[in-house]
Length: 506
Image (cartoon, rainbow, N blue to C red; front, side, top):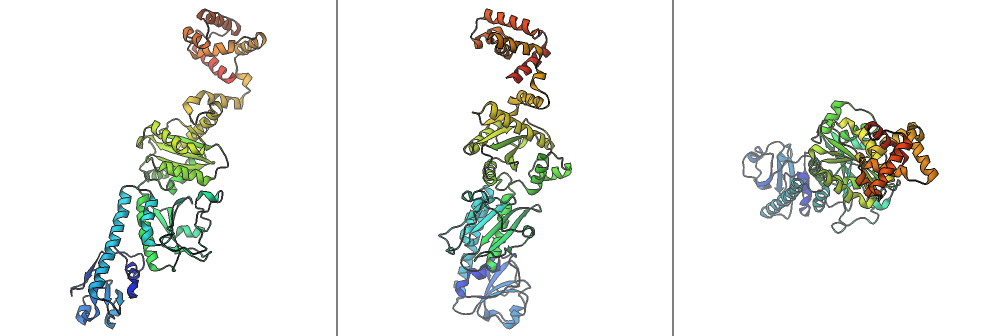
């Protein structure tokens, strides 16, 4: 990997070098070390040379912006040139320094290769932090744009922490969760494009780099100051690591962070019942490689305990989505809203449901699933269907964890009808009379009628469920027909209305 001269200067600290580096910490362009051979210099190489060889004619060959490591005191004429210089005045041999610089480049090249392999193999972003920790030698933190912890890497054996150092694992709801609350950040801090220091509130400082993808802030990387004060090497490494992480975030199937900020804003509008601009929605979905016309379905996970911290829900959702590239999430109304793209699915529907059940079971979450829909603009409506399925299902079948709306369609229609009309007003008169007959004479005609219709009026199968002889059931059906005066045997509309009314009564 290309190295920044500030890193090289500080990594050679044992020689106590002096430096005059014209360029900033975010410039990285040095590929290899090379011995100065008396030819015109290239900006991409670090030239190592003894000061005695820097004659006036050789100095003329050193171009603007070149980088040199000099053994001895640099000539005054060279100091006047706009180039980057490091020099070691005492106690250094050219061969030994050159060997160490070659080894230094090799160390960073190996590190860069490991980071790249972690990206290619789509490791969790925390792996990038773990690989960087021995190089950075400071506590590392990454939070996403929703102020949730993505990783914290604090190796107490690698470097000595101050006695008053507090791990930044604060959560406003539950400190034991280890979810990062960004209460120290201020609004302006989220707009910076270059590394910056947070206002110091403790004995140690915090160096921060915002990470943008497609001009949207997606995460914030920070180093905490332990041991010595921050140097330009820290600034340079912060920029390098942030670039690796930005590349890692663009592997969308990893989903170490929440949905990109633009898409998340569109999702929130839809869940609020509003309709965002179609072009803006299409642009936001494009960051995922999705389209407005893809097929989707929505799964809502509602906590059994309404006091669950939102950080815990977000952490569980993020961990789940990291295992499925076709699924993203949002936190809305204290629920987790999973949005599944059926057209880009890497798992079957059953496997997706199984993944959610496995990951969320320990949190005691009830899951409601919507029907499938072909336009992303329908998300708000199907979110409400999933919420209804979860609410109705948890009442009707409390022993289950997952409730599909299609299984509770009739219950949903009945619940909506009951909101606008008294139940008794919607029950056919014949069924009211049948219910009163049961109450007066102790019969079970309402139950028999319900089972009979459930079996599509098949006497044999209904009789088996009721443990009745076929003739006995036929006699009861004749009595039911006489009492209700309903032509359910010949009129399918009557059968449908009676079935719905029986469900209401139940």
